[in-house]
Length: 331
Image 1 (tube, one colour):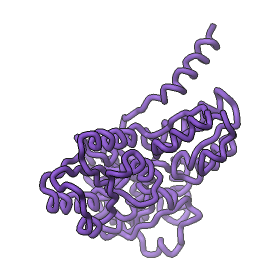
Image 2 (spheres, rainbow, N blue to C red):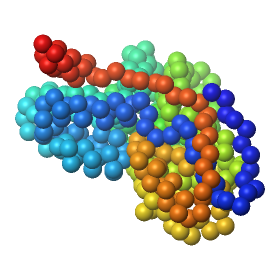
Image 3 (cartoon, rainbow, N blue to C red):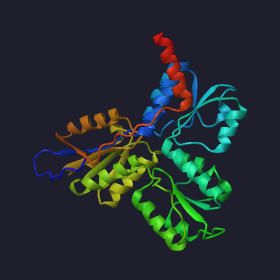
Image 4 (cartoon, rainbow, N blue to C red):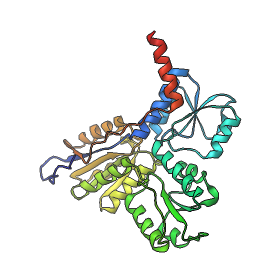
């Protein structure tokens, strides 16, 4: 759907530009559904390795429902049911789960799985893999674990300049799915300058939701005095939205919810844009809007860049169980 022309706010009322798409992406919806359905099917406790998605509110809600979040599988009792988060895991984690005889449900986002499969394929073809991403992010740790002896991590153009690979003619690059489009583009350009024969993924690794939310911020930047991004501090795609706003000259802040908003940010602001990272629940956006209205922002315009209709099916191990339960209940 094409973006409608946006008129600057010259009226007396302060205005909110509510960006769309925002909030949950298909991978996040799937991951949260996996935990909820597992709890419904099997009852608590269900163990989840790491945060299922990077949002405190989501994790707290699922914890109250009976999910137990752990950092490592060593904390999960032998033979128990464990869920892998949307960010994916390394083969080593899968091996550990097998040794501990865990009943695993894999909630890895299919777009992250795509990157893992690309890494394995390139490695089998003899390529050195350059992974563009942020060190210590859960997704990057999982991807690096696929072929650690053939993968180099870079986060900046400067990292590319220091890169030394065994064979410059057999190099490929892959990316974390939640990066800034602009920052990644600069790194890829430098990689191609240094390694003219470098290969890339068949299709862009940065996910559709990350791209759409960043493009929406760019679309309204010229009309806004302030950008508020709803999301957690450990959410990569949410932090990238703040960076995109700042890079377009808009004061931009990442907030968990209205409680994080500094009242001073609103001084002399006529137009504020609101978006949400791909793991942020919509009710937090609603609360933010309601609070802004109490501060004089009475006009609201929803700005839609593109309509998202992506859906991912449930993991096979959970889908089969859910189907079986439905069959039994309808007999």
